[in-house]
Length: 231
Image (cartoon, rainbow, N blue to C red):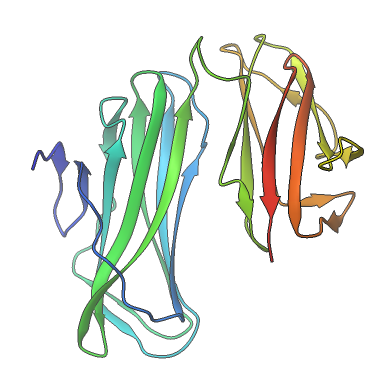
């Protein structure tokens, strides 16, 4: 096992390290988020693991972990979350832990975060995954991260095209009929030609029915990618 970096209190950034399997405690949920989820070389990004207990049995001796399962050579850690001791996650409590990374090279970074501890005396963990994209010259013009949209979740539309130009995004049904634009206007691309937009499955304030749709880009990017809306 190759460990790329390690910190105290179980906070780990490691390549090729699989997260432990979680037991079924539906009142406890983990969510890993990367902000921004699309970055350029030299930028810093925050990776935040949130653990929420919506009610029920508490989780004790909570410690956060982070592993990089692909692309560990593309980023470097700047700071780790820190806690003086293992945490307690009672009913109605949410905990969050943030790692800061700096982007070193272009490519895709796959991240897995999890919190390990005890519920009812049983060792367990709760896991979530996220992706950081650092587009390069050979990057596809459009790509959708987390493209299976459940209620309350978002998909990230990643764009790569002419630097400084704008892209318009429109949702089409499977027959190719336009249903309406995403957002309030065009998405601007940065000096590296990168841009992104978070899509929550709604068009003109209405959630799309369950099914597969196309997100069609025009302007600085001319391409399309599918997204699935689920219950």
